[in-house]
Length: 193
Image 1 (spheres, one colour):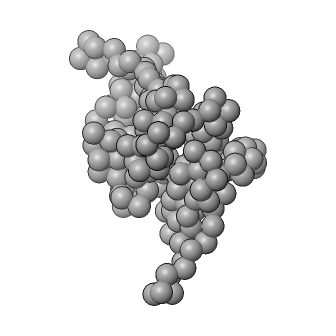
Image 2 (cartoon, rainbow, N blue to C red):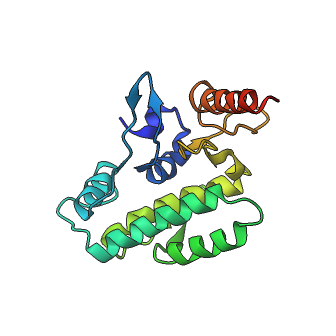
């Protein structure tokens, strides 16, 4: 099951959500079991499979090591951009622009006079331009601020904040939020606050 399906993410940002969460940095223990971090795109072959499962790569196409590196650089730049504070945004935006330049988009027009962005198919990994198209659409809708990275030091999962005020800090209040609040409470108790 894709992460976007498991966490009921809006379909128009599912590719973006799945791509940025293809690396799992979570390092927590829950009910005595340690969560194992992992990377769905660790090798070029894994990236090929990931792209094929989403219809972004033709069967039989191969991903080079250079293309694999570029895809990982795009993912890193997206995660940094989504997690950046206003003071860090310039550097994060520059890194994103540099990584995104390798994934050109074109404007397509329909008979109904609607416009859309589509990846320009030049290389095997060109389909990842769809991730950038979703990011642009999210920004145009004014909802980019709702894509956040969990504030828990043990998590760093990218989540879509559906709360009415849009001020969630954790991907899950029950899990990450509860762990962080419990940790803060214990720290205050130890200090005697």
